[in-house]
Image 1 (cartoon, rainbow, N blue to C red):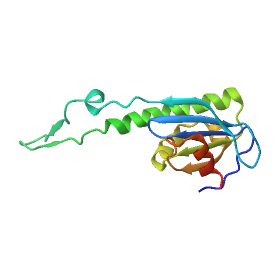
Image 2: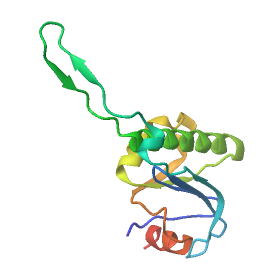
Image 3: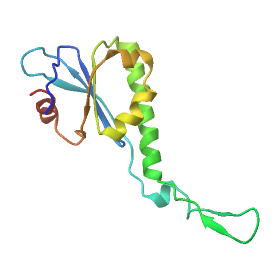
Image 4: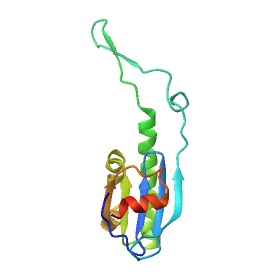
Length: 148
């Protein structure tokens, strides 16, 4: 568990590569009261619908040698694009709503993709980052994980 103070007006973004929950604290008591403001979800399509048939091949400039090119991980690429859209949404909310406290909750890999795509205003209001995947938890359990 992580010990984080969630005061009134704190926004919490819980996301992974396919789902994002944008929550806002509406109470400043000993137990935070997070309310869902928005959800974002990416449809989960199989590789055959996302990418190409098979990996390509390269040939040497001289001779008859060749080798296969590493296959693209289409799901990882789609997750990165989704996290970029989450970052854009967070940037828009920080500008529009005047958010001054933001907590990011995401798996370590997702945090690594999300962080550089956040604008300077959004990065300035981040008060905590939690490297956990809590997207499939109910809101009361997310609160429990954030507050010891």
